Image (cartoon, rainbow, N blue to C red; front, side):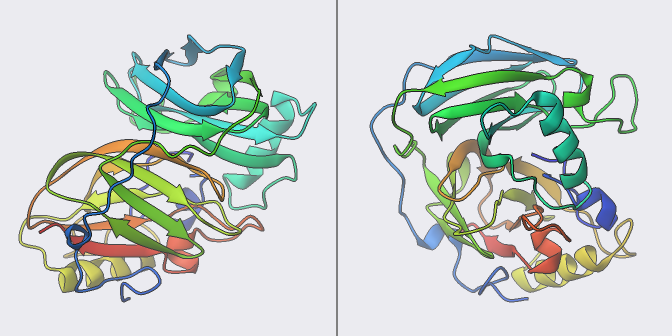
Length: 307
């Protein structure tokens, strides 16, 4: 969940969104492909299809059974959309959620009414995302925090302020069944562990084991021939740049991202990896008390290659 697709080298104000070495978030000689662990579980329920347009959702049920949810998210809009499920305290109105998010998206503290988060990651116009994630019982507001404006290259107000939200009640019991995936990215406070990533298109399960902070994973791909050491140096320069990428430093390309997840939660997304390429996974969520995003404040990133 973020106000715009995250880019390295943007101003700190832009990356304050809800949206050095590999130890604790940097680089390592071990590649993601060295660990062949996969995540498997019992099959998810039949997927529900939810369609996004500019700026609304269709196909969102008012009530969803608790447990593992499978969503086919179709973006028929002309700008990127997502669907973050925010669990809130009882009787919290959408308007109150929007007011709180306005502060969070500027790096402010999380309001006490925000209890948990999960959902469907960013989806490009004309594309479909298949996502699995767990929802525990409670009251939710499902919304889009993207800021793209139809017919413009500039950002505008968040899409939830344009009517792109739904109130959802999650009922019953459940919410702890792991989704099925080819590879796993596990976030903790403040680092990443990778397992099972190989060349080709993969379903990646993102998991946040916390224990305290909300996290997400944004994966960027460096140009062919970029070494881990070069990528590591470029990430440091890009994160330190309060503006466009500095001269001689190329902006790596987004290849996929998870949705934001509170501790104990996680969701799946698809990404295509190429053998021999170097990548970085970063978290641009701020602490619950506010402040700079984790990639900047806590060096929460990890550079890796796919063998």
